[in-house]
Amino acid sequence: MILETADQLEARLMEIGAERYHNNHPFHHLMRDGALDKGQIQAWALNRYYYQSRIPIKDAALMSRMVDPELRRAWSQRVVDHDGTREGPGEGRGGIEKWLHLCERLGLERTYVVSEEGVLPATKFAVDAYVHFVRERPLIEAIASSLTELFAPKIIGERASAMLARYDFVDEDTLSYFSARLTQAPRDADFALDYVKAHAETPTARDAVCRALIFKTDLLWAQLDALHFAYVEPRLAPPGAFVPVDQ
Image 1 (tube, rainbow, N blue to C red):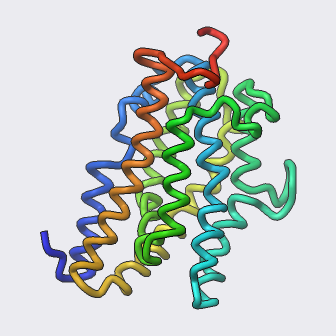
Image 2: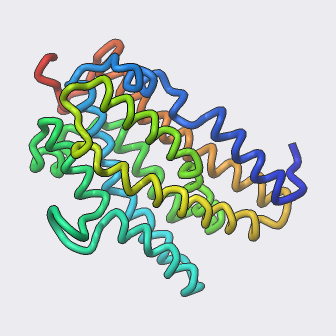
């Protein structure tokens, strides 16, 4: 399909999200339906920490390639959102600190989570591939890879409401990370979408934008594939990976 206009590009991006975003993954469906046990939720949170911890690294790498200071200033808010403006709890804590709080509330030791020792190798490969993509691919493709945030509010809403309703070891404080993301993700997605629509001026460039989004959806899907294989079916976690107490 040849994309002749910016509006056609946007429509195609939305189609990709509807088809390939990881809210369609069986692991997410199990989580949403209350079918996971606490150990499986812990494994998800632990592995997702690795992804969260690399987001500001990815964004800093992207900013280092931006010649336009206005663009850097706009993008820098993403780093602040994840790193925060101070260490520890309280005012100024960022998304990474909030995710660590989530892990602790689920019963994981903070030092163990931060050590990354129990993270699945497939998670590390997938997330590191994202950082490499942003460092190496053309700038517009690197920016386009963030467009999964267009679809984030849907999965956040499904995940948070389902976890509160179906898991007695989860409460609103546990899920405080997601409250800020409901406003941050749409803000960031709108900015990135406006950028790619304005700067992808040829069918070839628009196709590259779409391929970048597909890469990112594949990366997110692969992380849930790894979790499903290791902790749901057939439950074959590799050596050194986190082992829930009930396993």
